[in-house]
Length: 507
Picture (cartoon, rainbow, N blue to C red):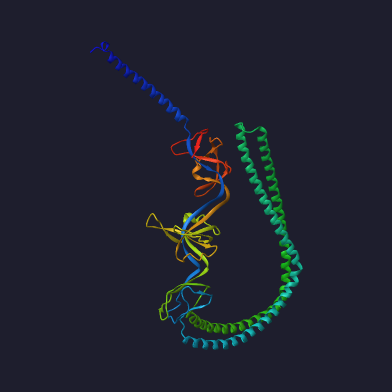
């Protein structure tokens, strides 16, 4: 069929061609609009405001609640429980009787030993009086002997003391001079190192010739000071040696005087020796009697301990937490009888990992809370921490046990609610900066290299603001410089990147 001979066909082909052209033009316009619209679209960011707040670095551990001085009393020997004089929950005072395991036959043995002890005490008193008399005679003989020596020695004592004091002063002065020389040498070394650095800077044109010459002058001054300090050390050393020689002369003079008096002392020495022999005999008799008395006292003490061991008393004032026996029970030595503790003081025993223990110190504040949804926080502080890793803690990631360091946290005030033996969470504050300029850690860009933030101005345009970081908390970090309270910081979304000068939309 020929198209020129069919007008309707021509109109159809023209309509199709026109539609295609219109569609192409419309598509091109949409592409241009889309690109312009995307280029003008602002980035939606989350905005944080810099504030002042407390920044803390903490560690968290779990621990076991105990009362102060909590302890379990053990049976001191094999015995039968005669009477239980306390009940669980009772408040008891120190020394209060809790259990009785007494054996009445031991009372008679104790009375017999006490009578023999009294008799032996009288014998010891008489022998000790003889010792005192012999000691008085010996002291008199020694005073007479020493009087002769003192006459010659006292004459030159002042001169000797004077020389000794002089030597001490010079020795102290010498030590100071030596330290000054060490300081001068260190100063010279420091100046020489500075000179090397300045020469390098001068060669590269970073400092002027005058600055380099100033450093060279400082080195020359340090060298002169070192020479002067060494001369002073040598001079002081000579003075010390001279004084020491003078001291030896005085000592020889005193020795000559002592030898002269030695002959006179020998006469008194015989009397001293005789008095010493008499004292030794008296001491022997007294010691023999004292030993016999001690043996009797030891036997009596053994009986008393056996009697007291039959009475179990409260070693502290506190509260009875548990009683393991009843009247009529037969207990063996070391068997648990009861547990008590001081309710006016609550502690938490911790087992710290060796990594955390390196940073924990006595006196650090702590927050104690019951593990659960409705936790109440109690204030406390670290009371003490072991210096060795002698505990064991389970590794949650394996079946092995890891070394642990034992520590105790003391509650500031008794809670009255924590149950002894229960598990609690303890948050120890390692470091704290109160009222510090701080920001969420997620707002910090490149925190491990050159940290910065995206700072917003009044027109919501971002700029790259370097910051100096301080104390790093769990979720916030201290800002030492670069930001002020009230500044706004943008956190870009993951799918977008910011550039300085970008206008953002806070969401």
